Image (cartoon, rainbow, N blue to C red; front, top):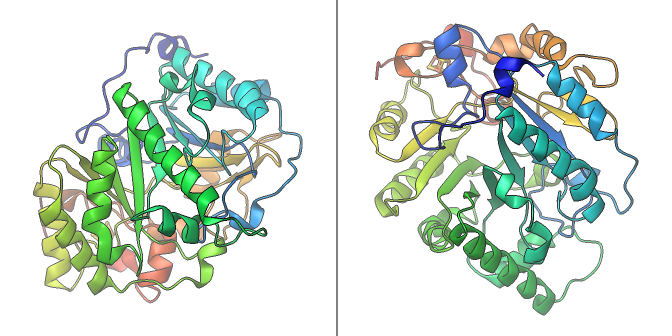
Length: 378
Ligand code: SF4
């Protein structure tokens, strides 16, 4: 391990002023993107089959043999710039073996190296399954797109091969809510993500209040990514999106940090209302607009195939394989990729680093962002 990194064990607390997953920090201070984030897909098992699942087609009933965790860590050792480590699935906590042999060693390594960590979970498993290691996670990330157990039943089992009874779904929903409350009370930073869809938009205020009442410190708001299971789901228009954001700002619970991720509005827009929204979001206390980490500071690694990809949503082929490639080499390869060149525009005075690939393809298929410039300074 890099000795300088070894000593970097005291971490600045996460806050709207300090989000180490945001590529803005490196881009604005170093004048380039650096690989500061690695995400491991550690399982394709899951007890749910959500209608919006971005890796739904990859979910399985039987798992392949993963690459040994020591080999994963050796690749992390080569990345001097690393600051954050994310763990995703499937449901990472589903199989105790995954927790024991992959997650716990990765978290231990991250703690010793002073890395920030995030684990994406549906939080529906018994609380005991999270005990003994969850305190090493900086951000416990959940999805929350429901008003109640009946919404959860419809959404979380939409693609399930077996019929799941409303009572069984309710049990999981209650478990998730209780887990979120208990872990939040115990000091775990729980961050709930809601995507804006034709279903969630009319209820966004009450969903936000429920997120706050579970004790979540952060509410993340994202577009629905039309990929994989969600490929054919209906999307909202940009007008509906903007309106939902405005309504949420009015109704927000002040102590809850709201993070807008992959926001589909930019300060180069020809529409005054988009530019105004950008300006207002940057003025609002406790609200942040996170620049897109995918390919700007983060790569994803599938621990079964070893494939290194830029995002688990897009259709961009692997940039390399962890069995033979260094992560930083794969990242450099990506920075030279035509898609990266097309979308990595940069308007520092307006604090913008350009759009996410799926959002751009969905909402701005005809726009050449390299020909645009921000119309405002912040
Ligand atoms: S960085 Fe790109 S998206 Fe952002 S304002 Fe500039 S041109 Fe537009």
